[in-house]
Length: 262
Image 1 (cartoon, rainbow, N blue to C red):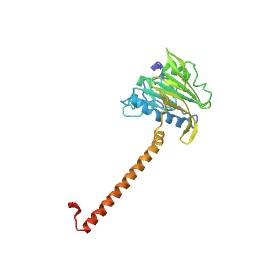
Image 2 (image 1 turned 135 degrees about the horizontal axis):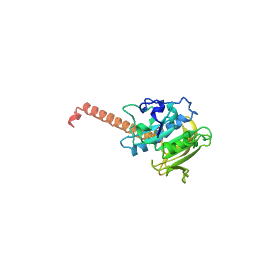
Image 3 (image 1 turned 90 degrees about the vertical axis):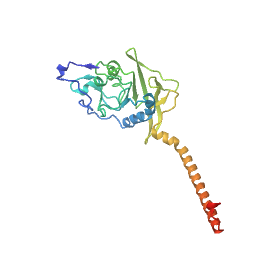
Image 4 (image 1 turned 45 degrees about the horizontal axis):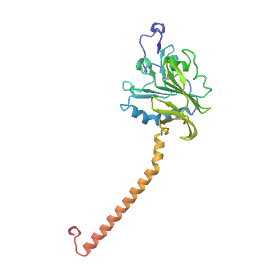
């Protein structure tokens, strides 16, 4: 994190997430970004809850990470399309974060993902201070950085080693191992929501696709249906037995026999 001289900026204290802009006024690049972020978040929650039994983690989606003080303030931030920060409280003082402020938090994101609608040149920009690649590598020092190009349905993943990013090689499944999370990242071709397309997704360390809540329900649907049918059959059998017992009791009463004394 870099902080310019406060006197030069006319700042008398370090602003927190409630005092900094939560948007730079730019549009989302395409309609896939929003569902793509939700897909990543929904499917990885189970893994993160295993890692963080105390629920101390947060996920940002198109939220600013402030790493230096500038004027205007938003020039000192990068807004990844998706990122995960371990070992931090999900809220601050009972409030949802409006942005992630490094001089307030201190813990850097473990992984940052950018969804490139263009040729990825902005996401690979290594220009000191202003380039995204440089900021994630040299300033914020994010351990894993992924660049997903929608047009190519391709993902590049970089790992910070000795202060520099090294591009990872895909494993035999075509996935990239995010070792500190115990997961793999790759491209999945299929339907999510109402759209069939290539999607950026997670797998576990054994190569099993991490499912969303809805996908889990769909997978369990046949089993649940069988259990429901079994329950209905048992209920029907119980009702038949009750009716049979009622007829028997009525017959005994007709014969002058109290069924309660039999």
